[in-house]
Image 1: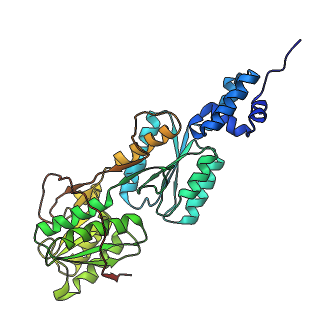
Image 2 (image 1 turned 180 degrees about the vertical axis):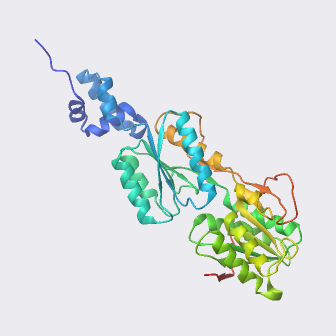
Image 3 (image 1 turned 60 degrees about the horizontal axis):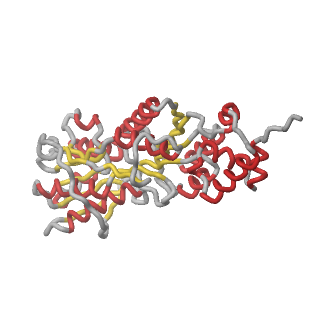
Length: 359
């Protein structure tokens, strides 16, 4: 007498779970709680269920495709990270679908919806808002995610970020070390964690130096045009013009240099300027820009490796889900001249802010 072979739906019914949960057990057991895994294992043993390779392929949530949502491709640093993600993913035999939220929460949500409908294996997302609750929901449905650009506030969500506070401290400390005492921070919006942490790190360095001051010039966009407008505004301050500027990124820093120069202010004689990110364009500008350099390659490669680990395909071991990339100081003629990179001191904490705005 022929006995009907148990199917995945039979296992699901016996274990009291959904078919997709059994599929996760077969393909990504790390996504399930130990009690759930035990119930499914017992049901499989009782039913003598044998999964077929074809069924596992069809039901698997690991499609071999990774979704990447960038925040702003206008910044060359984002392109470096994207290239690193594609390169590392290709080495692992995977493809990457890329979307650009351009700083829009609505577009970010649309890409998350799209990638989940396309059943990508997992998502890497450069986000500037609190997206963790949404990512936790997607993880429970079988789509893990990794955040880039800032640390995750959820222990369940992996992330790879830059130590922005340490970088901000190093930038301001460099300006202080070369004798600058009236420092301006050009950046915004402060609701963006990376921006506020860079300012907080700079604030700590200034607070530790007698006679030094720090003001914030708020800008709405982290672009060269916004930096140019800030540079022009700073040049009109006369005797209160700063003698050092820390720009939130290299594009803004390059714009500040142009804005100052358009008003007859010499860099670095009158005002020393330092940026953040380490973009190649900053090194070949008319006045090469000093910067706090971060490795976009390290960010992108680590993000892919963390996601592979979430998918149960680890290529290297991580002690925690949250990884931090340390920045380095690169000195160029916009401050004092060429020098070898120097690792910045660690930084933490925050102080009050004095701010103005530039439209």
